[in-house]
Length: 112
Image (cartoon, rainbow, N blue to C red):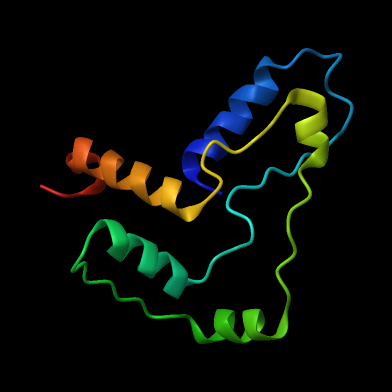
């Protein structure tokens, strides 16, 4: 889930009336299904041609994900009870917004 969607979900549940809240815990989903680092890299390079991206996967984490399945988070209760939906439901929207976020506030991200 994109950080802006996560923050928005907190505000949405805070703003919901008591009558709307019927569940104790909620899931909120963002980009579905979960994307790999390679897929994210492809989308970033679509918007920033020539981007140099490197990553060093954690061996233990990679072994875990090789042997497990990633389930889609069921956010139907949040959708039904307080009208949740992701404003950034796909990688293109996430990357476009985050590129703009970084370009408009480089100091926030340690880019001077």
